[in-house]
Structure formats: C-alpha cells, structure tokens
Length: 474
Image: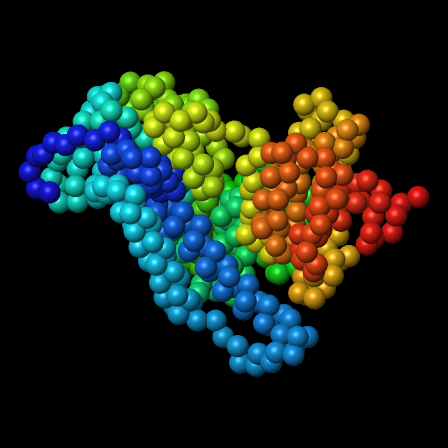
C-alpha cells in the first residue's frame, strides 16, 4: 500500500476483535458497506492472546490434573504421565489459527472489506490508515465504530520485559515450564493462568492487594476458588502490597508487605496482571471531537453505543466495563443495527460472567448485598453439588449453586454458581432474569437428568423450602 490513496465507506470499523468483527458482520448482513481495519490479527485479544488460547491451556492442564488425581479411582492408570508444554502450545496455536480463519471467512461472506494497518481519526468524518508497509490512505466515512480493545496497565517499577517479567500474552506463549511463578494480581487472568501452571507442576504464588481474590465477584465464589487453589498447592497472599522488584538472570525477587512487615518472595518469573485500560490514546479522539476519560481511556456511550459524536460508536473494551468478549459481541451488533436504522439498544441487567478455573465460577444478576443496596429484601440459598447425581458420576462434587430472590414475591434477582458446568447453565439463569421469572418458574422447569444444570432447579426447590435432594429445614 506504499503511497497515498483515498477511499470512501459507509462505516469504518477500527479494530477486528469481538466487538469490531461482530459489528462488521452484522453491517454486511444488513446490506451496508463496511471497511474493517485491524493493526494485528483478526479476532483481537480474545481470540489470539486471551479467551481462546487460555482456555486451550486450561483444558490441557485440567486433563493432566484429573488423570493424576482421579485416574486410579476411575480405572485409568497414568504411570509415567508427563506434561509437554511445547506440544500443548502447538495444539493451542492450531486452534487459534483455525478460529482466526473462520472469522475471516465470516467477514468475507458478509461482504466486509478488511485491511491491515492502524487507523486514526483526522476529523469527525475522516481517518488516516497507515499500512504495514508505511503507506498512508485517507478514509472518508459516514459512520465509524471504535473497537480498539484494551491494553494491560503497567505498574511503575514492575515493567514487563518479556523475559523475567511477563504479561498474559507472553505467559500464554511460554514453551518451557518455569520451576516457580509469582503472579501479581488476583483477578481473572491471574487466577486462571496461575491455576494452569500449578496444575502442571509449577510452584505458584498469587499476590493480591485487596482482601480477596477476584475483587468485585460474589464473595462466596472468591472464597470457593481460594480454597481450591490452596488445596492445589498455590500460595495465596491477599491483602498484600508489592513494594519492590529485583530481577536478574536467575529470576525475580518481589518484596511484599502483608501488614506484618516486608518480606521477599523469589521465583523464576513474575506475571503482572493488575488490570487493563481502554486502548484509545492513539485514536485521534481530539481531532474527531470525541470525549475520552483520561484515567480509564473509555469513550462514553449511550444505550445505542453512540459517543458524544453521534455518528461515531464505541463497543467492547473501548467504551465501558465489564471487559468481556460477549458484552462486546452484543455491543457490536447493537451499533450495527442502530447504524442500519433498526430500533435496538444495549441492556446491562443480565451480563453473565464466567471464570474458567476449577471449580468453574459463574454469576449473573444481583448478589444479595447489591439487592439490599437497591432497597430490596432478598433471601438466598445455596444447593451443594455434593447432593447432585451428575457431580458424583463425574467425580466433581466440589461446588454449589446459589439463588438470590425477593422474599415477598419470589422474583429471581441473581444466580451464582461454583462447580463444573456452571458457565454453561448460567445462561439459563440469565434468560430467566431477562424474562422476569420467579423462583417457582425455575422450580417448575423440567431439567434433564443427570446434568449439572439440575442444581439450578434444586436450588429453586430449596429456596421454596420444598427440597427434593437435601433434607428439608424445619
């Protein structure tokens, strides 16, 4: 693309991650001309450096741990079992490439034009595209969708170097196992990848500044995961501040303070995962007239995904929390449909969230504390997986399903679950919340047996004090 060119499009989509490619596909389906610009790989952070590769590794780690822990009980002999990270990485890369090619095919079938490069606004309806070869192209557009994703927050003094100190993308690509790993940050990425490396034999320590892992998640879910990680051999240090980092050819030394004075933790590598911020600083917001939060990088949007410049939309991590791929999917579709003149909007009430650890953690709707802050009078119950037939058959009895509902009406307010399959049946709970279901509605819905989803129905029975598979309270 050497040289300078100009083109026009109805809609310019900047970023080919979940929100961007969904917007482009939907626009194409609705007969709109769309140009998608992506500076790295189609699929964005989620497909290439996040959701998909991390789940591939977690699956491998879970299989390895299960064979070692449960194999004998299940009649599977695993003598001489070894974990080959390099081979796992080859499988992971094949999965990612297949998924990436699939998204490219979907974009092509929708009629979207895809160009490599970096786009930057030069005005409210113009942008400059700089291609991989340095060539520049002016793009005139009627509408634009910003889907630039997020970048890791860097902590001064703890900068990533890609060798001894790593971010998630770098840790996901390791081909040899370290003997020990420090994880600075007990959020989703820290817990998921920390657990994976612990499952395959690495000594892992997680350091979290706040009092609990997974800050902001339903407290019982955090406590359940902390117990599971500790049982696996992970050292969990919550309420602990990292104060200093030293690194050399042999590893890292992290000085921390948990309230009783400073101490030093040593490991081969340090994984820094303290959060992300919207990647909008290089977007040309000022030239386009866009309002940008200088702290978070977010572009403020309404429920139609419009920014303060109505013909420029923002989706996914570029506009607001939570930073979840499935939220970005929906926002991309909403933006496309609004551009095409369809009546639609984004609703926040029932965005599910899943942490793909063992046990799997899933949540949708309100916690009891959140409901109380809204002035409601909720009651919650928790049905144990230990009373679930499928859990015993699968040797996965750790976990529970909790229902939060309004005491006076039985209106379902939230569902939170820890255990195998939780991330699958949480969608049923989300649909129930969308439909305004009561606990009685859930209890009366026939669930297939034996499944983990039965725990949702059983929790509903328990909330009504009509339990079927636990003893009724007096």
